[in-house]
Image (cartoon, rainbow, N blue to C red; front, top):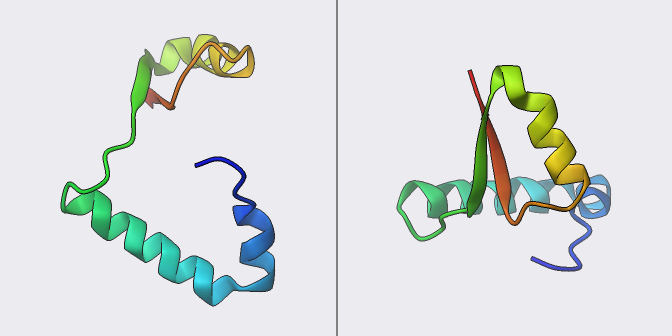
Length: 66
């Protein structure tokens, strides 16, 4: 998504935000939505992952695993 001001919408229309979140969770649960994970980092390397994200070296999500 590009250009979505989700935080601002949540402050003005929280019930709509709740519905959107529920819809997204249902779409993820039934496989219609699969977020792109560009990298996984151990908890010990979390700072490396966060730095990569801050330096815009990632596409999609990063996952920090225990």
